[in-house]
Length: 361
Image 1 (spheres, rainbow, N blue to C red):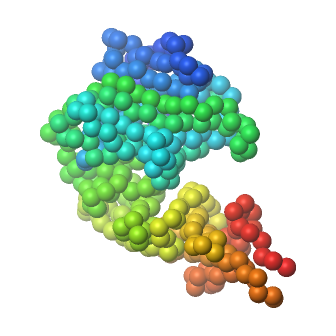
Image 2 (cartoon, helix red, strand yellow; image 1 turned 135 degrees about the vertical axis):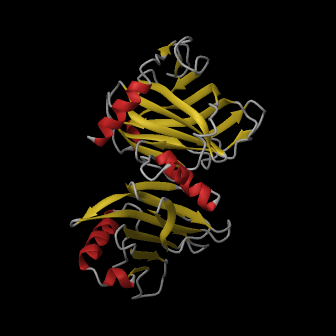
Image 3 (cartoon, one colour; image 1 turned 180 degrees about the horizontal axis):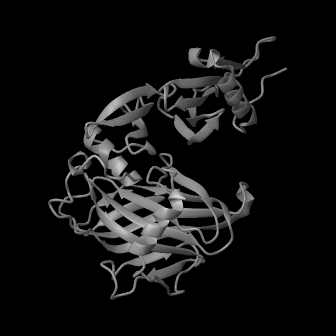
């Protein structure tokens, strides 16, 4: 119901926007041009990987040092089990340009899935509008227009790679950056305790507090926000769970917990909400590459919103030719050892994972 209500509001805001399909794209690409007389985005040219994917843009403005384009995607074709939008971390698969000639990294959020470093993905059912955000990082404050944003996009009918329906690009050309009044440009803590959050505002809160944008955000409620953030330099990166809580109209750190021991070459995967028993958790997998021995670690973890506790099951693969010695080690952390229900849940996740190598018998 909350999603439907939010989409109703979006639709009201966008009711004047009428993107038209020109049919001039190549490689099953459609081009849409906004109606010239009904909105501030009159000259925007929108490209999608297929004419079944429609776009309605609602805003483009600065949030901190970044520019965020908010829009709605609708799929009028077949249900997609997986719709993927790539980020700049996937080499050459996403980028943004302003009217001053600068090039930027970009990251998108499709629906409630804020995505991973390299992509955002989720199911894309037919004729269900999905609110989407694309953030352009560190835009020059004097820029007045985003000349081009391009994001590689793929759609799959099932979870199998062989079911790929399209592989193309979502792009926006000539997007004006909307100017804010002095009043509306205040920080969230200045604008009152009762302001309703969305993911863009939550990202902005984190940026103003820590000086960078988090990798993922989940709104627990209007007073509490969960973030996943990478910290450290390239040679010593770590993934952190950060919970901010609003007290007396000020956002304060409620908890910071390192999720696994992530280093160079690691990646957080499968970051999603999971219900175990009657409690809600963040479920994640953290993959850490090894060295020349082809060894690796995978952390299968749960983070508890309420207690801010982390539970992790460490799967280690280290190939060995030594007789009678297993090349797989599975180690629960102390929190997990004390919670059989969560240990069972993570053990099942691990056993079903396609990335683990079964121990030698």
